Structure formats: C-alpha cells, structure tokens
Image: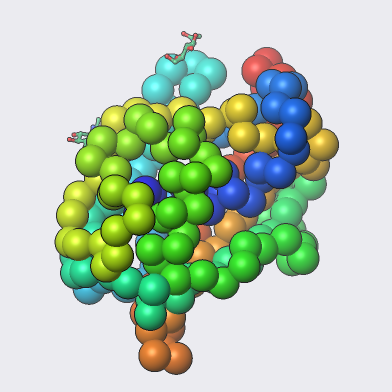
Length: 180
Ligand SMILES: *[C@@H]1O[C@H](CO)[C@@H](O)[C@H](O)[C@H]1NC(C)=O
Ligand SMILES: *[C@@H]1O[C@H](CO)[C@@H](O)[C@H](O)[C@H]1NC(C)=O
C-alpha cells in the first residue's frame, strides 16, 4: 500500500485537529521481517544531509490483495531512545488491506501524495504493483503537537485465513526541534 508502513505511522501519530509544526519526526529504521511472497519492502532510511533522513526505495505488492488480508499494529515507545521500549495501548483498528489504503487516501492525502504510482482509491482487490518512494521525508504535519518525544516503534502484522503472513518494523524518532 502506500507504503504500508508509512501510512500506519501517519495514522498512528495523527489525530490532532490542529496541525501546527512544533515537533519533527525522523525515520530511523524500517525492516521487513517476513511476508516476502506478498510484499517486498525494498526501502531504506538514508541520511540525506546533516539534518534530514529520508525513506527511499520501492514497495512491491507481489500479488493482488483484498480485504481478506487483515492488518494490525502494535506500538511501542522509548522515552530515552535506549531500546527500552514500553508497549502502549495505541494501535490502529484491524482492517483489510483495501480499507486501509482507502483510509490513507481519505484522511492523509498530503502525506501520501509524493509516493509514485500510489494505488488508486476505492479499488479492490489492489493489483500487484510497485510504489516508489524517492527520498521522502517524514511528513511532520501529521504529528500532533501533544505527541510524546522519543523513539516510536510500530510493528505491523498481516494475517490471511488466520495465519500470520507479514511482519514489519518501523522506527521513527520524534524531536522538539530541528537542532538535535
Ligand atoms: C536537508 O535537506 C532538506 C530537504 O531537502 C532541506 O529542507 C534542509 O534545509 C537540508 N539541510 C541542510 C543542513 O542542508
Ligand atoms: C531510491 O529508490 C529508487 C526507487 O526504488 C531507486 O531507483 C534508487 O536507486 C534509490 N536511490 C538510492 C540512492 O538508493
């Protein structure tokens, strides 16, 4: 999906109605653990310049995906950024793949608009395709000003007919200002 991960993080941290840019997110790490028959996240976080990390690469959706592919999230927070994570109650409602992509199109159009060959809204199943991320910065305007600083880790899991079929991890660091 969009980038599946990208969107989940956005959805995760979004929620403030008023979107003042007072906090900044930086991608730290993205890793796909399993599910390569379904998706291939050929994505990496790249140091773009002294102050900016970008997400670059391609998400390959390798076979048509519909809402029978169910995705859920677990969210962890580390205030010190020292790998001591606490499980938080934050998560997205479990949803089908098409439903999730439609949510992104509806709620976060600005955050996903720079993804090249983004899937079309209201189309299910979503066919096999490739979406390109060309040095995309974290979309800061989706961060609510009240979000807690520190390192946020999102675990994304996909299941089909009760079997886990996909697992990925995204880590984003949230700062108060750009002079970290
Ligand atoms: C780093 O790149 C970003 C995105 O192009 C730009 O906004 C920022 O000013 C750059 N920072 C430096 C120190 O060059
Ligand atoms: C960035 O991603 C694009 C699309 O996958 C790829 O063609 C390009 O080689 C990547 N650039 C770097 C520096 O990795």
